[in-house]
Image (tube, rainbow, N blue to C red; front, side, top):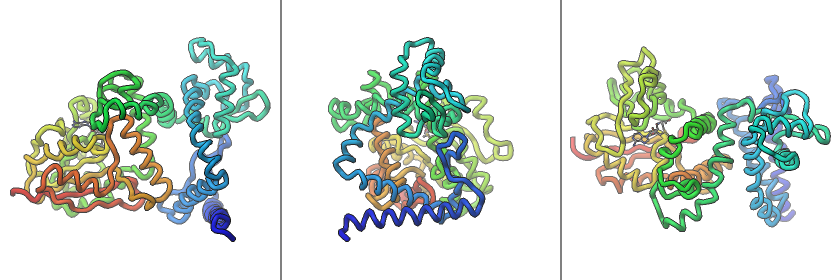
Length: 436
Ligand SMILES: C[S@@+](CC[C@H](N)C(=O)[O-])C[C@H]1O[C@@H](n2cnc3c(N)ncnc32)[C@H](O)[C@@H]1O
């Protein structure tokens, strides 16, 4: 057997083996597999604790993807890859025109009746039946809606999600609509502003012809910012980004009784609260922008934690005022900024640091090429591109974090970087070796 034939043969055997692990597991528990049937399961009921089937599914995804790509071959594969950008077009059109709302959950609807309903949902905008049908029939090749009988449309489990899962529908709208033109403008932005590290010189700025940084821009429009926030829930809702990895993944218990953690950009304090619940000897000072602090949000700290978790206001680009805390903690902050701004954030800490103070970062990190599984590799590389699209920032490899600390101040001693098992986020730790 030649090497190329061996590869497709061994992939098909691997696929059959992994599928058996998953189906044996599901059958033994009386569970279903995910399915596109409108009443099927939208995701696999396999928790990460059940490691063998959980891992088998990730490996199955990687193996089927490779076999699919090999079955196409490089030439056909590249051809399809390039024109598959229209996946976003059909998705955007269905989302924008609220087609999921117009299709009954049970049964089916003719294209003619559907067109009437879709027009009603869109202030009687003239949407030709032919256009609607072509978007639908394209989306159907992605298993979004189906045509059970010629001329009639019915839901699948995927299209039903567009109707019933607000966070996921917002994710779809955000990616296929809000970021559609920005993506198309990234290369133009690189030409207009070569090597820019500014969050005001991005594909978003060109696409929307405006000069605000991303967050200021989306906050100007309530609908846009609400959609963004919901979309981020769909993203953060992924198992690998769960707060429990932040709670369990760092040796918080070793910090000592009464140790203080300053949580910079800590939002409404939900991460500090989760850590505080698990470690009753620690105190948390959560800092965020003034806009985050309203009477309603300030009331969000549970009663039993109010003496250990305080929500305060601080801009992390300005000198830190909480002096000599044990830990200065940043979760999901640095990946939103280009290097020069990360260096600025680390410099702004310096006046507050005392010998032994730790800086702990919990953030994405790019795996060394080809060291992670397919899903993780792919999602981190995708995230890295989106950071360029929106804010000219980037995801970092372990070595990049070390460089950031040393550019900020030589008195930072880079410690270690690790990824708790099953987490998609890393911990990166440095210690201040300067004055007492
Ligand atoms: C991606 S969120 C991360 C929130 C939280 N740390 C977490 O892990 O979910 C970024 C946070 O940084 C805050 N932020 C942005 N610019 C800031 C600044 N200059 N100073 C303080 N906080 C800031 C935002 O308001 C937001 O809450």
